[in-house]
Every structure is written in structure tokens, then in C-alpha cells.
Length: 421
Picture 1 (cartoon, rainbow, N blue to C red):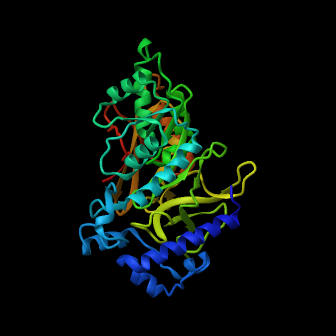
Picture 2: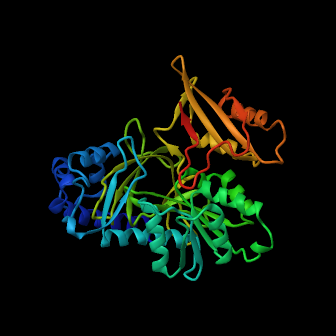
Picture 3: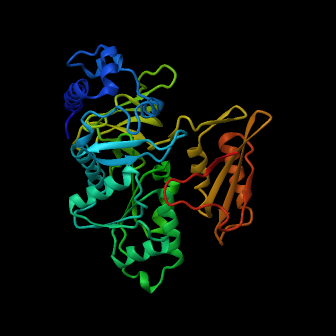
């Protein structure tokens, strides 16, 4: 593995090549680069000092001004062959186009995810996705097929049919969100019998939610799936696959630094934080040239760290994975509360099958209430114990209410457990 100087040298080389392409063909960034007065061969430090951030609203406004795809296209439209879109914003989903070259660059990033998870080319992978226009589905699937894995799509199937297919085909790797892996695992546990004798699942690769790096969620998944190893990663439609979990560094996500120049900034002064501090993740795509992003503010809250595998140099990683969204924090009677912190506590109770947090505003003050579903083995005082644990963690009284089995919604993709009323 290259040392830090070599990593930064490669990032600088790829950044300069990217900027050269953008100056000649990308209308969205051409004027921004000119105003930033960046030289032909900037260093990473010069790039950070002079180049302004790109925000989600910049992309929204651009697509509204230049519908339907916006002006962040480096090449003529005829070169683009792949269409995806984000899961949605307040202004609607954002479309994203890629050329064959940029698409291949994202598949290379997925290769890193599979390699880190120890997925061999002969292993069978089941994709419990609906296969809509979300980028993560397609890049995960196509990277696997390119590597030689027998890749089994689960789109259009019920949960029971997906589980039956996994058993029938002796699937060894499952790809889905942590929430859906839990749902399938509960179904598997409920229907375990002689028909599941060919069960082979050894690895679960998750993304789409912070739960993949929460110890409580990982333990529950491993228990449900008879000891299967959970591997987390993260990415987004705007950027592609960004991080992976190294087998020697669980509960952290390593940045794919040859494909991304990452910054972790203080939200107040917008400068780089020190290792061990938390900040917002900012990304520059170095290999997705067709629809690039320069200093994109992801909105993800992360903790900066470095990790050096045995015999290798230190790489940038995100301790604890994605800790939450910077815009999801709520202030409850003067206390900062992140949804992931609440989930971490609730998932510490294995009897909780599903939960929902309802946020309301009364007399201009935010209030929270937690609804939980429990399994048949739960003690009658479960709600009281969860409430007490939340109170100890946040010094707040957050009411916890038991609801009937099946009353709360179930999710196949990203969960929406935090409801604002």
C-alpha cells in the first residue's frame, strides 16, 4: 500500500487531470474554476484554499435552470449511457448521468468493497434490492458480475421468496440495507427447518443507513444469520461508492483515496478538523469525470481518524462510520440529539423488533416519543427499561410506548424511523 506522500501525489495528479477536462467541457464548473483563479497545476492545499464548496442546492438549482440533467456534464450528451437518480430531495429526485468510463471507475470502487469483505470470485451474491433508478443497486450488481461472482437479483420478489432463493441457491453473500438484512434474518429465524439445511450465508455487505457500523445492529444481524460477518460501506448517487470496512478495522470506514479527495471540516469555521474530532465529510470525485463534484458538502457527520493495516501506510478512515446527518440533529430542551445515537441505545435491547421515533413541536419546543415493537420473549417492563436508558444517555425524559406486533412499518430500502409531525 502506498505511503501518505504517494497517496497525495496520486490525488494531485488526478485532480489536475480532472480540472483540465472540466475547463474545456463542463459548463457547471468552468466559471467556478475561473473565479477561483486556480492555476493549471494546483496543489491540494491550493485547491482547498481557493475552490468554493459545492452544495446539494447548487445541484438542485442547476437542474432546474438546465432541465432535465443540469449543466454538470463534461462531455456531449451522446457519450452518456447510464442514468440513475437520487432517492429524492424536497425538490424531487436528482438525475445523474455517466459515461462508460465513469461508470467503470465506480465499479472499480465496488471492487475495493468486495475485496475488503473477502468476497471471492466464486462466491454467490444475492442482491435484495428492488433495482429502481438508485445508483448503488446497479454498481454493486455489475461490479460483482464483472468480478465473476454468480449474482442473483431479488427485485420483484417478496421477502419470503427472496429467502427461499437464498437457501435454494446456497448464497454465501447478501447485499442490502441493515434494516432489510434484519427483516430477512427474522424471517429466516422464524422459518428455520429442514428446508434451510443448505443455508450457506457467510457475509452480509450493508449500506444505505448508519446502522451498519453500530455494534448493537451488527450483533443482532450476526445472531439472526448464525454468525455471518457484517461488512459496512457507504456511498451516494452524487459521488458513487466512497468507503469500505477493512477486516482489521471493524466499526470504521476507510476512504477509497485513489478515487476521492476527502476533507472533514468544522461546520463553524469550515476548516479541516484534527484526528479524533467530528466534522462534515466533503468529497471531490477524482475518477468520475463525466459528472464530477468538487468539494461537495455531503451533509454526513463523521469522525476523522487514520488506520494503518499491518505492513501498510496510514489511510484516512471514518471512526464509527457515518455518525448521522448534520441536518438531522434536533435540540430537545437544550440537548443535542442525533437519530443514530437514539438508535444505538434502542438496538441495545435485542427484544426490540422494530421502533419509530415521533418528533412533535409543542409551544415552540421539540418533543420526542418512541414507539417499540417487542418479540414474544420480551419482559413486561421493556418500555420502562428503554426509557430509563434514554434518560441516562441524554438526561431527558423521552416517553417510550409499546405497540402491537406488526403495527410499525417495515422497510426494504432506507428506513424512515424518525417521523416529524
